[in-house]
Image 1 (cartoon, rainbow, N blue to C red):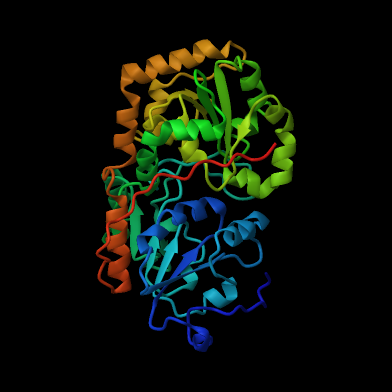
Image 2 (image 1 turned 90 degrees about the vertical axis):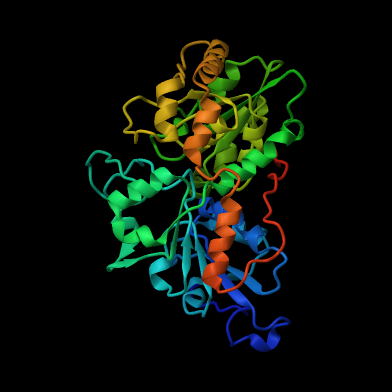
Length: 407
């Protein structure tokens, strides 16, 4: 879709004569990448069955978007407006999983984190320099402010701790802060009673332990540092006792391409790896997991909260913000040692989980509004829309059964 393309739109006046419903409030969903898109999809059931609301989507990119993103948007069946058209549309609410595109819009905006909250250190390297990585949170004025204005009317925080960090890092944004908890974690928690169904959908048999191998993106990720990551794990675990599931960050799929990812992992899949797609399936895998071998990506923390024993596939020299899930896991969970037998390491991870009570500890650090994110977010969205909330209950549904990538 090019910038010159214009599509028939269910919002605005130009195509109103085609509409069946008039007078609806419009919600524009900004999806700059698949990670933001998957998180924003968790919010859309909040508008379900409300005939007063029309939702449309856009990729807020100026011609430099990921090809995989277009496939993601089309697959979910929403009306997708070109960015040139969307930023000129008269909309009533914007949902965003990153700050990209917000500065070009004037409608009230809700900004949600797309991975474990804003309040954690993230590796950062200044563009086109050789300077070392510097830690930063997502709560600084460079992320939340633009030309003296707060970028969003509601900045969604997952934890009261983040509110305290925001007060220090960007006090001007405090009036927009909404501590909602973590809607992704709430859905994962709602999925845990269906563990056996997820295990069967992933191909695990009775008596097998499910090991989820999770990697974020970048050269510092587990897959970036260990191209043979999945081959090593599979070679180190007896297939009759363990079922291995691979969860790669969507950015890996988007940047390198689905064909290339499948090609890189072809031998691993033939050796028994169950590979989940980039847009959905990771929470189902975590609900089924006995163990997670993961790096500093947020999936590792969610796995710990779901009750899995965590073995960390990362180095000890990465800066961590005290009191975050990543920092707590770094203190308590053992490190993966690739050259040593893997089953005893998984047993040690289970012992460490039980000794420290990691599932409950990490859950408390991931959210301070457990089970309430949908309630807070719906109230916030409808306040900004200027509509009373629907009378129907706020949905907190289990995630769908996983659909592994075909071999």
